[in-house]
Length: 314
Image 1 (spheres, rainbow, N blue to C red):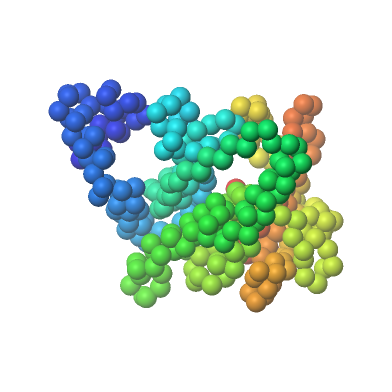
Image 2: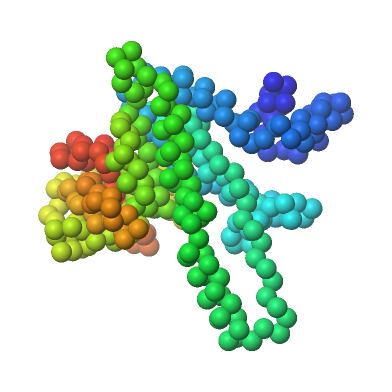
């Protein structure tokens, strides 16, 4: 309790600054170096408490995203951590946070996974360009043939499974499940296994920003070509918050939506087609120098009216 309170007050500071006395600092180091103090054992009780406290909420959004923890300045930790891109060195943390669907109020963490990548082996001295191409070709082939569970992209499926398992034991008095849990993923979560898993799990849904231009069944077309060919159903104005690359502005979006039947990849051919709804939002009258908004969303939730489409868009 003392350690947790100290970390909360001075989050992100070195432990030597967080603990006021030398004895507390020593106890802190002892606690973290204890083999029993694993990441999973420290976080699981919090996840369970979150699930119990939001018991009874009809709909819960489980929003997933990945954070890169960069510690490149800590040279002594270089061997324990791994590359994070753009010259970074540290850990990778994937989180699933519960949100209230009406106001976006955070309700607590539901699941987290922490890992680090392996450092790449340095190329042999005097390597020729031909040998380099051959070596990189072999590395890509090895990466492609790795089992799905061993790939980083598996974290999206794992998040779906872990959160659903968390809620599985919590039942309503009438025997139904606690809540309808709707997983919200960005483009990295546009994985066929996510849609296959959603279909098998009762009382769960998914909203994913599409990244793959998937082949559609019965339309002899692909996702982007088919949906963008539809007539605009309505216009929606959306407030875009300020970011490092964008100033605050109000975007005017053309909205199209329809049901689609997506052909499964060869590896999931036995799963059958994925029948979902597609919603495409594209910005018009874009201010000079601004990148237009373009969102293709796929969801298991019903989108047959403007009100339902606005809910998914929000």
